Length: 187
Image 1 (cartoon, rainbow, N blue to C red):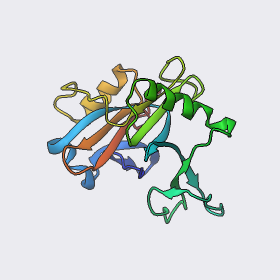
Image 2 (image 1 turned 90 degrees about the vertical axis):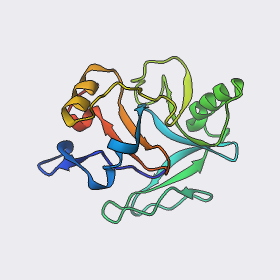
Image 3 (image 1 turned 135 degrees about the vertical axis):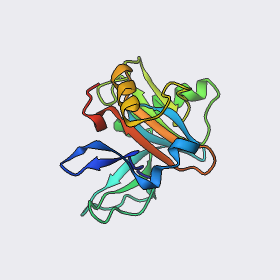
């Protein structure tokens, strides 16, 4: 799972926030974008029916055996995200397996990318019991933001208790995101 860009350009004076200017590579959002809920958790993948966690190989770190690169290394930061297979033998992976098993119980294990959310993940901002995997793009935000302007998107994110929005291109797989934090809004 490749890191995705933000819908709006970053503020050059406050890189944590955005300005009212669309990133040119994301203009497609306004004609072909499907807004979906962005969950606050840990990126996870199911590949060939097995659970993987995202692992960022930073400058100077060794790539673990069997790690699958998600994208090329960032030339500026040196970050290089990979998928690393989870192991039943590692205590640190137990919540990934709880989420995976909850999907299996529902008969919904399918390859793809997911967000692991739950009581022991990121302080549980999603306020749920247990640990679950939510498939990326599963929760479409139907007709809630119309028209999709900078101000309307900001106002929407101020009102709802979600981390943000991931826009999926309706046919070619492109994605971009917009988070509360991009506007300086705390959850």
